[in-house]
Image (cartoon, rainbow, N blue to C red; front, side, top):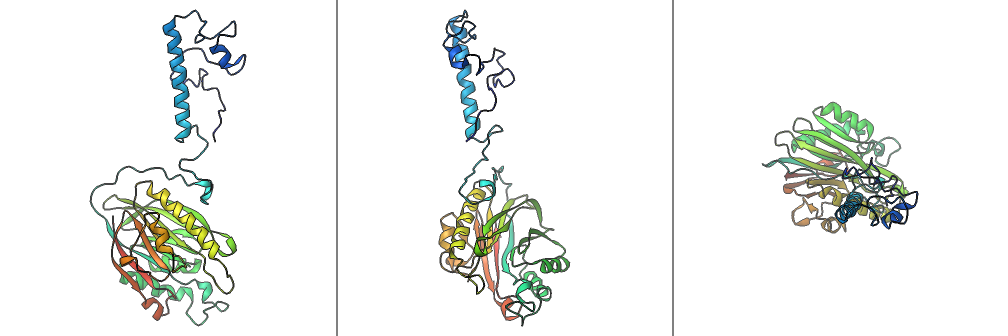
Length: 338
């Protein structure tokens, strides 16, 4: 709740610039002056020597100032202390990320291939990892980039995308930009898209510890159309980190709230991720108006692509990345049109 920290009826804060005397909150108070209780009543006092018409003008001005000030507070204007659209219980940083609204999109259509790809982090295939028989993360990145190129991927949400793998990806695909930190990122073809804005939000990961997930606003250079892209990795139940169902459920609620905020901007939203859940993800995203790229809402194992304001076609789950030892996940690809 916002509180008044300055006298809105002082000369400096007079919203209507009437040039009349201020109504101070000290020295008897505004209500006393309105009632004419003080000998030096202000011009809007009903005992003032001004005529009835002048008195009524002053009262109308006072009511208008109060109305404008209250509207400003409720709509999150410059004098408000609460961000527009904030929801303290939504789990997002700062109680709400304040995405605002966006002007109408330009005409025409934009089509591109979008992917969700868990590339299996390097830590899993080093000497102390749980998959030591596989090649290193850096070596496996060659196969990951080759698979993405074979499907003409333009935008991808990458999970378990660790530092040495990101460095290798940048060498192998220099025309791609990377948004994100540590294990999760969004990559995009810089020849086709311009990065307009990047943000992040946190979800509970193993044992409830926070982990950042990337958000990017991208613009199609050819059409000027913009979109939000979000990539997530919800916590699994593993031998070393069991019992994460409650953390996954909380993460889904945070992600649902984020989807509502992004949809409210009027831009299309693309949501990729490894959800580590085969049972309820489609239903959870349905409830916030997010459509699955998979035909007939078919489960795509635990990896998904969802969208709002997006038409999906040509859905593929390429399991060759698993048989070739590139990753323990398939490459999920779909054509998105906005």
